[in-house]
Length: 264
Image (cartoon, rainbow, N blue to C red):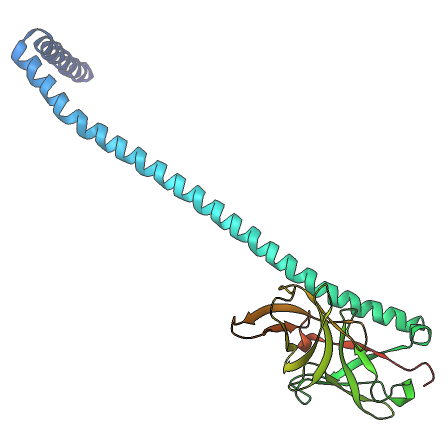
């Protein structure tokens, strides 16, 4: 029985082999069959090649888009990092100034250069407009009219009220407050008026050597008051308007230095 099954299997394989030989012979030597097969190959091949080419193109496009997107994300992350770093550097500058104030206070600097470090109890938003309430008063040598400096960045105002343990500081940028200043490298004299929240406006003669970025100095104290931000003028007027502001955010002030009289 097993021998018969093997014989049948061998016979089927033999017939398949014979058929394959016959078809191959016809394809090689019989022109009509050969031509038909050739035509079929020419007809089908372009489609197969097209599919392969399209697939390859789509894959390349996908890879390119992926790489470009990845590069843009990396560049965006780098830019964000740079912006954060610069913002941190600006903030760190003010924080460093405050740390220096604390250290110098601990070393007794107030007695050496007539300055008292005071910490802000209430600022813009919690105290009246453009004023500060600080924790130093007459017990610390503070008196009415004392000049107030912020973290080495320049003069910001003066003491207008004082008690034994606290003082009220009015910022020079308070609306309507007038202050004598020198503007630019030539220290062009002018009267500056506070516009609120660290902003000022002044006027200088047309043609004066003033440009954005120039320093504005208080003529009273000789200290920096602000930086020129913009200039507006008309040819028909003999003067130009100078807009400047303090080089920091007044809402972030945490401590100040009060310049006191040596005799107080």
